[in-house]
Structures are given as C-alpha cells and as structure tokens.
Length: 417
Image (cartoon, rainbow, N blue to C red):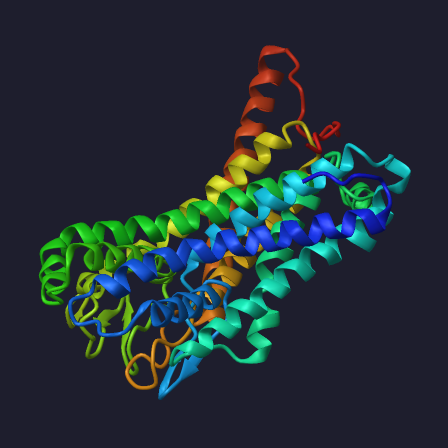
C-alpha cells in the first residue's frame, strides 16, 4: 500500500483502495459467521442472499448505526465488534500512511495527507458502505441513508489514532504544534486517563464475568432451549460475546451507583434488582433475580474510588519531581478524561433491541459520568493528600537528621512520549 510518487493525485487511488480493503475486512468479520448460522439453522428456509442481507445489517450495527424495518428497530451497538472494526481500520490506515510517508518529503507530507490520503481513504470506505447498504435491501431490516454516511466513524477513528501519535513519522505538523502548545504534564495526564478508563471498564467486565460464572447453569439451559445445530449454537455464542463490552458498561454502572436497565421499567443498582420481564436471550440469564439489597452493597462504590487513587498514583509517578500544582492539574485532568472516554463508550453501547420491552437498553450516561467523576476525584484526592503527608514526613525526618532530600516541588522536564 505505497504510492508510486509523492504527488497528492497519485496517492488518492492508493488511499481509496485501502479504504475498500478496510471495509471488506470488517464486512467479512460478520457476514461469514452470519451466513454459516443462517443456512445451518434447522428452521431456516431462506437462501444465502437473505443471510447476506442479515450479515450486512449487522455490519451497520457494528458501526454504531441503527437498522430497522418490518416492525423492528435495533440501535444498540455491539461494543466489542465496534472496537474490533476500529483496530482493523487502525492497522490498514497505519500501513497506508507509513507506506506513502516513505516516498514523501517531510515538507510535502501535510499536503499529501490532507488532500489525498484522508479523503481518499474515507471515500473508499464510503463507497463500500453504499454497496453493503444495497445488500441489506435483500432482507427485512436496513439502515437509513444517514447510516451509510455514519459508517465513516470507524475509518475516521482509526485514522485519528494513527495521526495523534506525537513524534511519529506520520504525525502532521499541525498536530505536532498543538501538542507542543499543551502543558508539560498533558501527556502524563492522557496516559493516566487511558489507564483509568481501562481499569474502569475492566472492573465492569470482571463483575459481568463473575455473574456469568455464578449463573452458568441458567445460561446453558436457556441456550439449549433454542435446539439449534452446532454451527448455529456457535454463531449465537459469538453474537452474545460481541455484546460483552456493552455488559461491561452495565457492570460499571452498578459499581458506580446509577445502575442499568435492560427492559422497560427495569433497574439493577446497588439498591436492588428489578430487571423486569426478560426475553429468552441466554446471556441475560446472568442477571440477578428480583431482590432488595442490604445497605452494605453500596460498598461497591469503593471500586471507582480505588481506580481514582490508582490514576493519581500513575500520574504522579510519571511526573515525579514536578511541581505540586502541575501534579494536581494532571491528576484532575486524567480523572475527567477517563470519565469522558467511558461516557462515550457507554453512549455507543446504549440503544434499543426492539420496539417493546427492549426499546431502551443501557445506562443513563449523565448520572454515570457525574457519579464516576466524583468517585475518581475522591480517590485521587485521597492519594494526593497521602502523598503530600508522606512528603512532609520525609522532610521532617530530613531536618531532624540534618540531611537533605530532593523536593517534589522542583520543576523538572516531563517526558512527552
């Protein structure tokens, strides 16, 4: 995937082909299992074209786009599938940019990038999305025209992740100037925020896995009631695994306090479980039964508080020796950025799985963001105050012994990598 010359016009076809390849790779991820499951189901009387249409509709769902038709509306995004698409876009676009960069002088790179590579890559992906959208016309559910354009979220995010790497050969000059204008502690804040977001999602995912293990018998029993063939069972399991990322946001909402809903009128939170009437979806067998929880369950709120302390610890290690004000700014910014990342993922994970009981599934985003930010800041403040106390205790010991020790109030050069 390298251009044959350094001119923008010659790089445009290369970028468009890369966009087409990316879309084809993401489409194959869902269409091949969908076809296998469709034709292997014992009750299926439709052919390959119907399976192709269903797989194409799932492809749009994986891009965060809604599909509907024939009294059906589905807008919930399989979060792990979406992230898998972004990884594919990241890999292909990264190879594209690196291949072209080796043939372009640094002074010409920005022009080739913005005039050719970015628009060409997105155009190739959009053309493929139009073809996939036409394939959904063979089935009963399809996206609206806006949903075809909305698929550009995946390649745009993949490109952005390639371009925002400071110091990389493919980083545009405009971005480098922007990074240089940020405070010295900004890179440490972002790295700590990214770690905090992963810890939060990991905590929610761990709660989901524990619930699945505890309720494994119920999940297997519901799965067996489908009485599908082996291949169809495997496809059904894969489909449910794609939604485990969504379930991780539910688990995190439980740990943070606001809770989550799976059916209309239902709520599962530390106050109690009122899930409502559930459809026969195997993985939903892991939901708790109707119950009111004792007050001690609210202790789960300490999990996000602990994550806030770990975020502060990580940021302070990266900024060891920096001024106290810089460390405090980095810790506060890291907490806010971690919450922002989680909130965006939660917004994407929310949606509908039908028009009745499952017309809204997910987490109230604003309450979740508010609770999480408060809890992270409490944990970060506790760590920061503890670190301050340790500094002063060390200073007192140094004065008593007549020795000197490096002060964390001194400004140091911060690593921007």
